[in-house]
Amino acid sequence: MLDKLDALQQRASAALEALTDLAALEAWHAQYLSRRGELTQLLRSVGQLPPQERPGAGQRANELKTALEAAYERRQADLKRQARTQALTAERVDVTLPGRPPSLGRLHLSTQALRRIYAIFADMGFQVYRAPDVETDELNFELLNMPPHHPARDMWDTFYTTREGVLLRTHTSPGQIRAMRDYCPEPIRVILPGMCYRYEQVTARSEMMFHQVEGLAVGKHIAMTDLKGTMTEYAHRMFGEGRKMRFRSSHFPFTEPSVEVDMDCILCGGEGCRVCKYTGWLEIAGAGMVHPVVLRNGGYNPDVYSGFAFGMGVERPAMLSHSIDDIRYFFSNDVRFLEQFG
Ligand code: DAH
Image (tube, rainbow, N blue to C red; front, side, top):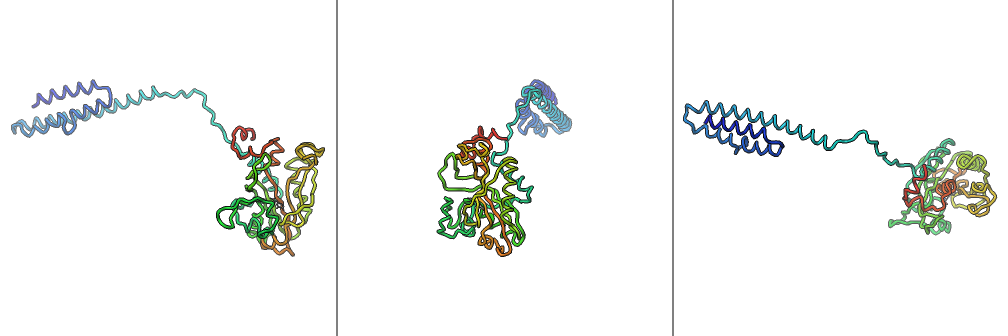
């Protein structure tokens, strides 16, 4: 028995030295140390030895088991270390290579224009008030003084949803009602920016979605001069100190009186060109004094309170400033266009 154990020890040790990878190591373990392994078999046969030989053989076999297990673990650690060193050398990263710069995103041109507008109005005390893109017919039209079948509704080609009375807002004006109902009876000075939607033929000049910025001021002594001053200050800061302003009489159901706000053409300076259709003027906003019916719908008594409102597009002025000749570029998501700005 002891001879067998000696022989086994020699064979196992030699094999352990000779093997070079972890798979072979596991095979070695199976051969000698597993439940069916050679050493385990020998240990089991100790019981069949004559009684006087059993203790010596048992002790020797157990010592050998401990020794082989320890040798197995040492070899395993060695082989793992070797494998890791090999992997590190083979898959080595050259940290001296220059990095690849990640391509940076940038703000969309409309966002840039919106942020400039926010900054200008913030300086005049206007806060940004958010209103939803999906609106009710009631807020988009009715409460703005356009009952069902009112012909003025034809000014806005509307996307209706499958739910009765729910639509995509055609302008930011319904936010006026929301802001008034929210603030009433406090005075108000807000701008309401956001996307608007119109069921329109998409052309170089008109998109089916675009941004507007609405403005609303409500208080006790607000007059037309406040509207003119605010629009003039805005145009001067947005388009240059020297801009000339013109307030042209117009009509909107939710203002009385109503005006179109024009400034002299930034391309020809008022001489007349293709962009201003040879009029010398560019329209930058619709505006007016908030209609008494609208004030009342917002909760304000029109005998005590008055207000002005305006609504302006965002993309068209940006087109002028950057000589962009097609509004469809804004939302067609071609990065070659978007990358040119910012
Ligand atoms: N909502 C109008 C439009 O989309 C623009 C407008 C005109 C807004 C006059 C106003 C306003 O607040 O007073 O055509």
